Image 1: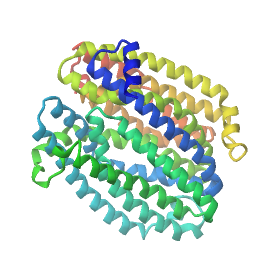
Image 2: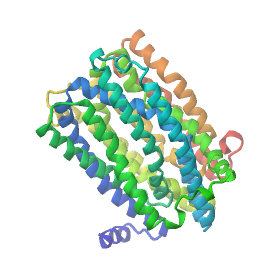
Image 3: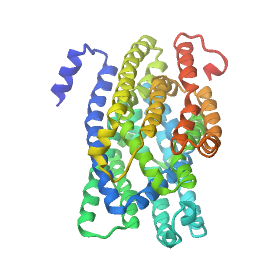
Image 4: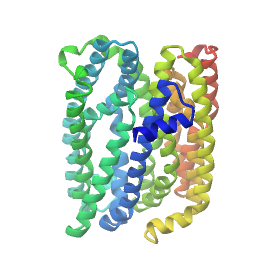
Length: 454
């Protein structure tokens, strides 16, 4: 496999060590992501047949609801990613270990508080009403939410290891974790369809704890081998390290919170404005068209930390060359989205048959959203890599504020149906296709002042 990767790099004329590392991890990311996508696509019809459409809609909404709480890492994950990459670029092992230790123990404390608080609150909430389903499901949902909150709290801590791998320019590890989780989930759900009755509780428990177990193993393996020198140690927790990663992480935290409002509330909005069943065709269209952005993100992901390193070392020629290549991939991805939209009805028929009907208008609306998102993504990754995210932050805050009321207006006042929800999100992110390229050109040509350079 190493010879194959080397041959590909040679044929492409790749000589830079940094670019060689990127292409290697992009190659492995494609392998892992391809397997992950295949497993997930097989999982959808299997899950619908196991749970039924309503329970599957509840699970999708529940998953989105839990995603809202990812902001509890207060941006430390993204802050760690940039600061760890900078410390390694300077060869400062002590500083890198300080950042790792501070992030782990800070998020560990936050997770403990989150789990205790959420488990207490869970017993006083009417989950059936929250998910707009029958009252008879309330008892089962209360137990499931307890399991989901507990596993999520643990996952907040253990998923930091993937941040370290990505900051170390080894982003394919995250793809490997997703691949293993998807394949094992598929095998377990297939086994359940043959041996057990339909149960949202069993299904949710498996999907909650499986990634936690895999990440726990990865943490143990990483900190006893490759990253032994960076193993978290409470003695290395320092307030100055916290300020470093939180100073940058605070902006990422606000961005992360805004992005959650933008992207993770759609299922909940649909559930409240329609019912859980309406979430399913929306997610079918989303999963299908997200294939394009998934492959594009595999190419983009390694560049974040590589840009951090290159920007720290003032290697602007490498950044410019890389961005030109990324823009070519952007154009190719947009063309792919158009083709996927045209053939969507036939694909849906082959994939899920008559189990779920996805209107063409919903597919087109979703395609417009992905085209906008893909267009500004290379500039977004560059900005994240440099840490100049103030404009980025304001843009997403405004989008997050507008998204929910705009969705309600388009659905209730203009009768756009489920399509109105994704159209609202598209409108909210559309300004980024102008703002982010402008900031990139200002930064790369050393012409950025004021908010463009913050």
